[in-house]
Length: 169
Image 1 (spheres, rainbow, N blue to C red):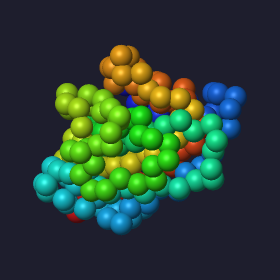
Image 2 (cartoon, rainbow, N blue to C red):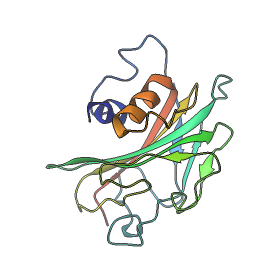
Image 3 (cartoon, one colour):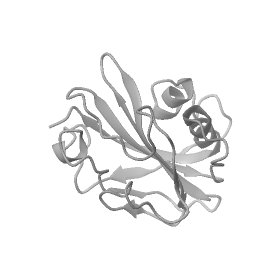
Image 4 (cartoon, helix red, strand yellow):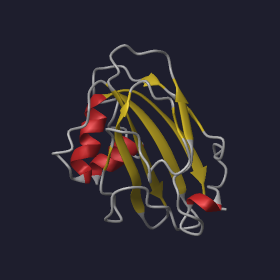
């Protein structure tokens, strides 16, 4: 789980302990707003689908893939809710419920809840972070445990951005 905290931003491990510079990605959504509640439809109280996400950054010629990590932190618990990796580097958005029909060639890690795909957050209070990582390689699914996949993402990150929802509507 240390890798999850390092990747998600709870620690200051990623970007600071590595010599490479990490560029910034702008992350947005037509359904989520920074610092606002996670809409009920994307929580366990709604239809539990993944929300639409968009991202943009300066062109990075070394980008080979994109990864998305959704994690949540409450006063009593931390969890990874979704990891979608090997998204083509030319992709700049995912529609609603992309976890149910992910882009061709992508993979989804088994998350804290024990299943692959989007595991909708349930606690009403907490921070839910939708992070987008641009990678200089692809994630090897043969190294398939959650900590191993998160470490691969961390090691290959060349740009990152985040949209954080606070609490659930």
